[in-house]
Image 1 (cartoon, rainbow, N blue to C red):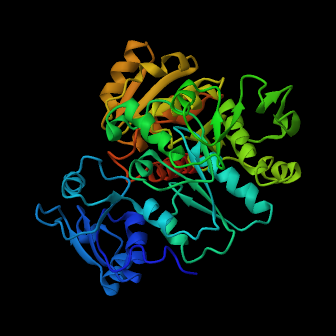
Image 2: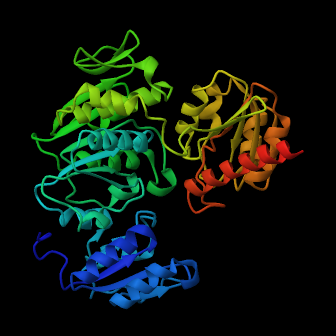
Length: 459
């Protein structure tokens, strides 16, 4: 299979940022005869040594531990930016001054995809990963050849050599990825919802919404957009899009997917009984409806949808049940990196809740959480923004304690809890002050909870 004809061959390409996407992009590019320079601010010993040595042996040139002013010049044909690199990084700004195209690994991989591949892209503020996972699992259960990629943790580049004719790609697409996409066009694009998030990265909510809407930019009338009709911001940013639009709603019966009499319907056809769904909460029902809208376009039966959805227990770090211990129930919602996610988590419980919050200070306003705090009996917080959270908690007269790290906060939360309480990690904040990613934060929380249970059993 010839990928992308002569695109990305015999060029000089600058990769900014290592991580998963930089590694996968470098492998593809060096194998296509390009000269590749990879720059990362981390020192060599901080990077994956096996991947580093592999790329060095292939001929990738590394410049690590900083960003020299004279490294990027007009001799480069492309700058491929890791999604996590700020949009105002000096190399990004310089590349634009020099007329060097700035793209990312997703855009690069998309340009190399065979033409007969179906691409399904999912974006939104919350619910992306759950919706993406559900779509993938349902398509997989139907027997079709499908690949799970994107912001969910698997770079698109890593699938280029595995694709076969008529394969399906299901891809979670973040705002950081969308920012540097140009020709990317999904056959089916989903927007789960929109609310303020990643303002530190994209500088304003208006810009965030503009970037999110880019997922529909290149779609034609032959493509499909699946939208949450209950979200005003989704409707606002999509009012002029070209593709055929299909809607889902958790609030009213519509011409699309909706909830009625305890069931989920697709165009007046009953598909699922909500009583048989293991994951709870309206947000999860919305994710399921978005998935149904997509897989029905592929002709997948209700029986297959039921088989997958009725057995689906949720996605790790998204309101993930950890355990019951001494009458307390622990949940890991480490993926809650913004207020909206924590609002969703707090709405899922009607029990007394000890809320664990904290992390990177992103200048957010926690007053957006106030109306959802009615069941919160105490906040234990840690991290860079712990004092800001403490001030907020005191302003709404919820008892609060601050700690230096997650372990101290979790242990104290358990000590102050009573039988029947929920102990919920839903930080409302990014993890990067103390962790590389929210997954690491969630894994540590689960480890701490298990230690609490084991220590108390032994005593």
